[in-house]
Image (cartoon, rainbow, N blue to C red; front, side, top):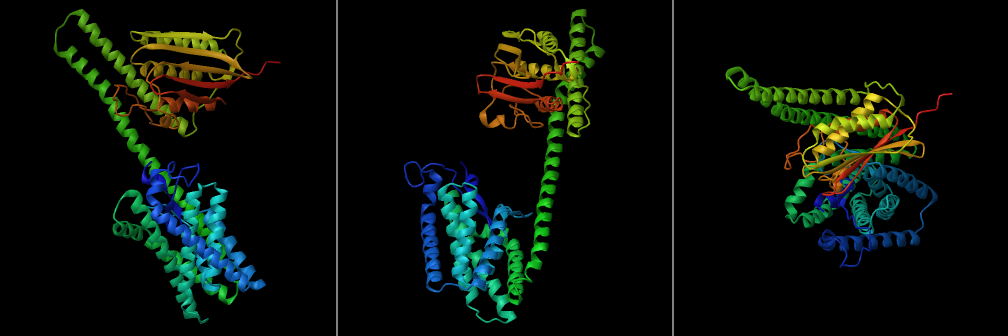
Length: 490
């Protein structure tokens, strides 16, 4: 587990994260990362607990008025909503930014440190509980918020006047204090996780979160000033804040999609260039040899066979690219009708016989009296041929391949099983993505565009079916898909 697995979203980006789900306090079973952060986590948790207790006692000693309770409740609701839906900000490398700080600091400036501590505690505790976060992580994050909220209340309280200048200064100082405590604690835990120096870590996080801090400080001051004039007037700001938040999330998603498109474009160019080079080189070499040399008929036939085979390979590559493009654009047409799935599977098995290498066997297991499936016959054949060719390709040491078709509760299940290299567990979630290859560096000599399985899944789903894989690395794979039984003709 790397440091990135221990970091989570916070008001200015990241906070401590432990993924352990068992007992949190037995040192013999705690993750190494948790043990490393104890010198930071325990003091923060203790300080947060002490501050929360002090805030509760302060309220008990001087119970607030109804208007104060209503105001704190309103700011708590706003803080909860902001924490539950953090904003991804472009250019902030540590993670997302929560606007909860705006309402926590506003509470500290308007009502005081005790109210801010309670709002901060409830904000994180409730959100973390709803998300079912590990206890260690929830305790640390809650402690960070409470400590930061108390610091904001103390800083804002240094200017107790009600004039406009004092409110603005108090709001800004409160935001700065919250930010400073958050960054100091965050840098401490990350430095211990990554075993880096504290000061460079702190400097890096301040550099990447400085701009969001200025934005949030400005919003905090705006809320404080409007609230001082009239709490109802501050409601006017809610609409623009919601629109800004929604637009920022939409913009970030759009930018992420553009980056993904750009990545796919680069990957497509790299994969296609690599896959085209081998057949083109073979065709070119055979053509040059045929053109410049006199040779026996046997050699000529061999070279012509190379040209034919590699040309067919080029055609398949281009067909895959065009098919993937149509499927991605939802422009592929399906002519779905009653189809004899057993006959299509038999044809796919016969076509694959010529591609079997030495030591590789292909069996066909068909359940008798199978009903017709609702499918596009050509698309179904394409899926079975692709899966069978994949099974052959990823069985370099031979073994047995089986194409099975059987009925399963209103659907017909097709399976292609091999005894090849298998797929690692962490790879299986991505196996149907475009350009994803089990052996991208060709360490086993297996090439490919990484489009075949993506095309298969899209074709199956286009025929109202579903597709999945079960595999164990080194023990082969089974690709299965189900299609609905064709409706009986009345």
